Length: 435
Ligand SMILES: Nc1nc2c(c(=O)[nH]1)N[C@H]1C(S)=C(S)[C@@H](COP(=O)(O)OP(=O)(O)OC[C@H]3O[C@@H](n4cnc5c(N)ncnc54)[C@H](O)[C@@H]3O)O[C@H]1N2
Ligand code: MOO
Image 1 (cartoon, rainbow, N blue to C red):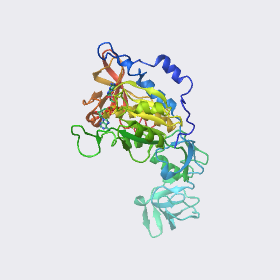
Image 2 (cartoon, rainbow, N blue to C red; image 1 turned 180 degrees about the horizontal axis):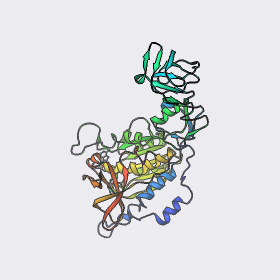
Image 3 (cartoon, rainbow, N blue to C red; image 1 turned 90 degrees about the vertical axis):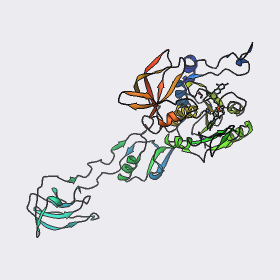
């Protein structure tokens, strides 16, 4: 499946030019690699972009999914494509808000019967009459209030109790009237929205079809069971991705697929994987087993992001295949892979869901965090009343830091220490990512 309306290099006009003129930070240039030789002779220069530009590019190149009608039980997490308008009044008739007696006028009253929850026509009360009623039942015509059962004093057919005009009666249309707009287009559907849609009698909603995401994990050294040993590394990225994909509002297709370090196998997998976005881990650097960029070149992909000025996660990449599918390269170091998913993956998915890229909230860093001179740092932090505090264990190969943290502090490049940062949620489903 491909995203609707995606085109090759579908970056809105001006976005790429704007970034080319001001955004590139020029990492990956010639590096001394022995006497008289530089890596630039063997390795093409990477046009690394700043972290914010990478997010903006991923959001800009992605295309919102098709507008579809979805049954309520399949719409949770989707985004409304049209406003939610109530076709009916809620409640449709005046209803009792308490169990007790519905009365007309002031007491005492004469009890003349009982209205049940399912009574379609409760009739009419004359002045001075009352009838038993349950919460939610339609009140008889002429009713002025409900006396709660705990306040009612009943002697034979005589009822005494407090009453006040309108008390404990939910009036017809008090929640909404026919034609009222209840929610705007662009709202993320959550359980309360589903309940509201059912309340107003809807069975289906008009939504933006959420993107499908597939994951390819590469690495000859990876094992899926047991622990790491010399020459063997336990896959830590595969177990993270399904939850990240689901939490970001996308739909995982099939299970995570493991591939050896083989250009041919990566090429076949990229050709045959039917998903709007394909994640590829462990092939993003420039070693002999890192086949992502050669594979993308062979497939005629447009390399939109070729490295990001951030730590960890700088070899991450974003490309668009000629059929419109997007590919995100996740670096093999597990925390770097997580950062890349939260950077490029979530930004692309957010647009595919039909949502704007949210602003990240600012937070104080009371103890300071050392800046990187040219790269944005993503630092696992705990949130306290005073601000963000690093939890440690934030190296590219470690997940102990992010697993303990509440969020990542986004520390802008700079010469010294940051005393403020922005917050990137580790759970891409939580606000502000949730929309
Ligand atoms: N010459 C350069 N070398 C490297 C660069 C670079 O820019 N130039 N970048 C370094 C950084 S930073 C990272 S991150 C890695 C990214 O490398 P790859 O994406 O090609 O991944 P690998 O080389 O296969 O693996 C790196 C590291 O991570 C371990 N790994 C891989 N997959 C998994 C997994 N699913 N679960 C757990 N661990 C995994 C792998 O065993 C390696 O230890 O490149 C640097 N090198
Ligand atoms: O940037 Mo790598 O992605 O640090 O480990």
